[in-house]
Length: 205
Image (cartoon, rainbow, N blue to C red; front, side, top):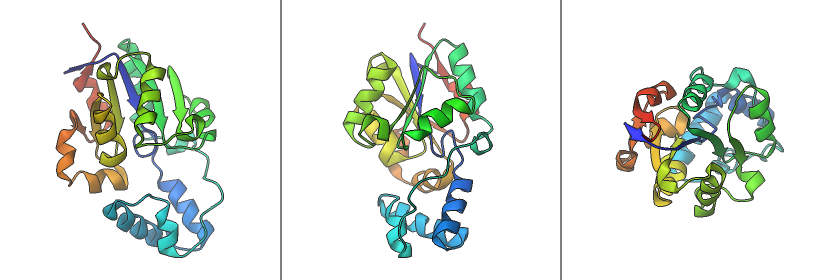
């Protein structure tokens, strides 16, 4: 079992199922959800930024993103955060999100010690500065932080380089594609649901 003082969660495809959002965006740009997801899969496989999907489709990017609602949460998200807090751990959320997502996450029921976004901080993953801000917000040494995310490139590798422990969750398009990469073995924990953290993470003794 990992003994840490803080657990910090990525947002998209870690806590939030983005299927509805991508489906809505497909409709806005005039393609089917299947077409958009196929293009996104190609972008992920190449290791490009997800914004490149609009270039692949030959359309203008949507001007804004759909708001996160309670219906978008993975069923294990709220119970996991509650369980981590009950263990006395610092709990945070920090991902590559618009600043509006911070209030949206609080409104739909997340109780965390801090909620942060790349837009709010002015720096996005995989920058080392992002993970420096994570450590500052958590208020403890990087080695005492577990960062949980669905991507190898944006979550596991940069958090590990920052000295944090990492959990890789295999879900969502990035999660399933990245799970096939050898670097996935570098994560301290490999999980298929947040419920698995209950047996894999504990507070320092």
